[in-house]
Image (spheres, rainbow, N blue to C red):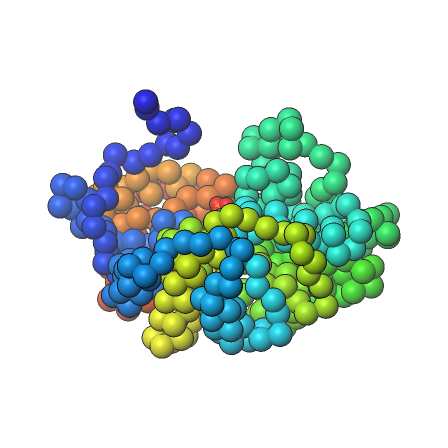
Length: 381
Ligand SMILES: Cc1ncc(COP(=O)(O)O)c(C=O)c1O
C-alpha cells in the first residue's frame, strides 16, 4: 500500500529533536521556527514531558469515558488556573477541528438555533461544520456546503451588526480566531472582539473563541482573545495544549449546562492524552513560558520591523507574520535548505509565518534573524 498523496512534502526525514532543534536522518541540524504548525509549545522531547508520558504509559494508557478518569479532573483544574477561567468546564476530544465542531454544536444545542457567523480568512478545520465555517472553497466538499454558516468581513463591526439585525433570532454562535493563522497572521482587533461579545449578549448567541493556533500561551496570555479584555463563552484548543500528543479541548462557560450524551468521543480525554497535556501545563507554569513568549516575541517583532525590505510585521509573542513585497516561496525554501531553518507560509503568499516553541532562546532568535536577513538580502525584490 502507498500513502494517499495529499501533502506536498519537503525531502527531509526527521529523526530526532530537542527543544527548538531538529535533526534529519542525514545528520543535518535545523532550527524549528515553525513548531510543526504551532504544535510544539514547550519544545521537542522536553524531559518532564517524556518522563510523564512514559510513566503514564507503563501504568495505564487508555480507558474510555465510562469510568472516572482522575487525570481529566487534574487537567481541568490546572487549565482553569493557567487560563484564569477557573469556573469554566472542560470537554476533551482529539483535534482542533473536532474541538470547533463540538463548540458550534454546543452553541446550537444551547440556543436551539442553527446559524453560525464566521469571518473572511477564517480557518477552523476540516470536519463538516468546521470546514463549512472555513473561508476556503477548495477544501469544502459538496456534502459540506450549508446555508447554516454566514460569512462576514473580518474586523468589520458594522457588517457584523447588520448580520445580527437580519437574523435576530437565528444566530447560535459566532466563531473567531484571536489571530487568524492560516490567513497569514491577521489579528482580530480588540474593538472587534468586544463588539462580538456585546452583540452575542444582545442577541443571545454564543461567542466561540477558536484558540487552536493562537492559544495555549503562544501570544503571552493563555488565550490571545484575552488581550481584548472580554471573556468568550467557549474556547477551542488543540495544537500546543499537549506539544504534539493528539488532543483537542473546549473550555465552556458556567452558564452553558451539560446533558448526558450531548457530546462524546471514544478516545478523547484518555489517560495518556491527559498526562501529556498536564505535563505541558506544568512546564508552561514552572518555566514562565508565557512570559518568555511575550518578551522574546516582542524582541523578534522589533528586530524584524527594522529590516527595510519588510513591509509589515503582525502578531504577538510566538505567532508572527512577516509581510514582504513578493511571493515568499523561494525565500522559505532557501531558509530551509541553505540556512536549515524551518519557517512557514500561509494563505497569503507574501507572508512568512513563524510559530516557534514558547521556550525559544534569545540566541536561537538571533540565529533566525541573521539567516533571515541574509536570505532576504539575496532575494530579488
Ligand atoms: C485556528 C485553527 N482552528 C482549527 C484548526 C484545525 O485543527 P486540526 O488540524 O487539529 O483539526 C487549525 C489547524 O491549523 C487552526 O489553525
